[in-house]
Image (cartoon, rainbow, N blue to C red; front, side, top):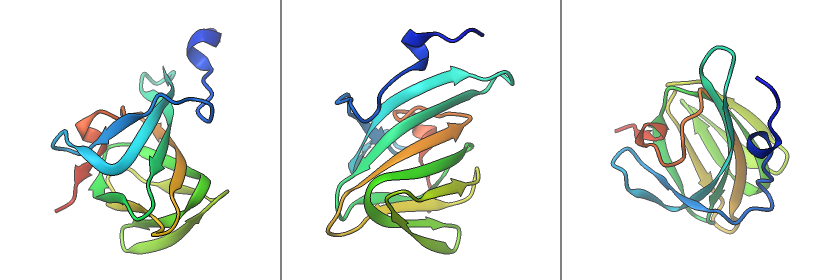
Length: 136
């Protein structure tokens, strides 16, 4: 596949195209929105993509799973990422690998919002209920 500037380039830091992030019931997650980034089909046939996620101070995602591996990169703010039984502090510049189907949760600090780039393989859209299958 050739490089296509109209589909393969998007500035996620300069966009204001925020959309709600939904849970497995199709309901918006309170305090969290995202921006769709570049998404394309890889040579294996799976989608690979990147999105920006913004979480307001004191808010976050509940423990959830999904069928995608992903890498998170903190571009602004602070928070906590819980993966399985491990909790790690999230600060600007930190990156994290989260394996598919492993319960994880992300929360912004009480006094600071959190902006993260999320790279997923295979990519699942921000509005897709499969992106956040809540762990009960």
